[in-house]
Length: 184
Image 1 (cartoon, rainbow, N blue to C red):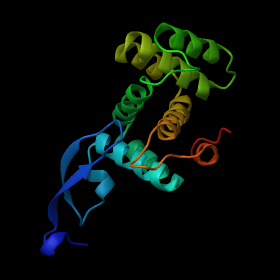
Image 2 (tube, one colour; image 1 turned 135 degrees about the vertical axis):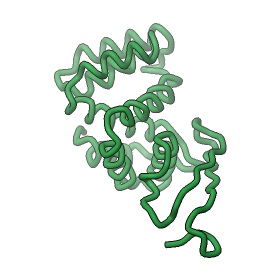
Image 3 (tube, rainbow, N blue to C red; image 1 turned 90 degrees about the vertical axis):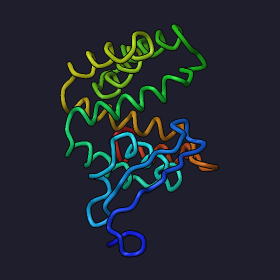
Image 4 (cartoon, rainbow, N blue to C red; image 1 turned 60 degrees about the vertical axis):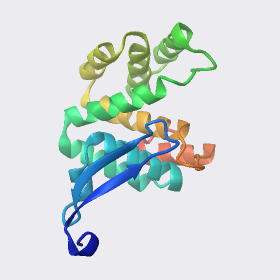
C-alpha cells in the first residue's frame, strides 16, 4: 500500500484527546512496511489503548503484545512505565497517597497467583518510590509473571481510560481480561 498521492512515506499526526496521554505526536511511517514495527513504543501503547477502548476488541492488545515481545524486555518495560504512570493517578479503594500504597501491598500479600501479586507490588513500589523501585521488583520476577502482569496493566489502564466519548463497560473489561490475561 502506498501513502498519499503515491508517496510511500508520509508524516502522520496522531491526536489523542481526552486520553490522559494527550497531545500531538508526529511519526514518520512507511506504509509499505508494518506500521506497528515503525512506531515508538509510546505511540503503540497510546494508539492501542484508544482503539481497545473504542472497540472493546482484544485483537489490538494481542497485536501490541506481539510487537512488544518482538522488541524485547526494554520495550515491555517502557510500556509498563506508561501504564504505571497512568494508573498512579487513580485512587485504590477510594484511597490515595500512602493509603493507596498500603492498600496495594495488603492486596498483594493476599494473592496466591504471582501475576496479580507482581502487578500490585509493582504498582505500590511505583507510587511510593518511583521508577527505580518498581523496576527492581519487575526485573526480579519470572518472565511468565512479567508477561501476565504487563497484560493486567494494559487491561486495567484501558478499563480506567477513555477515548473521546468511549469508555469500556464492566462486561467489556471482564471479557478483555479473560481474552488477554486469562484471569477472570
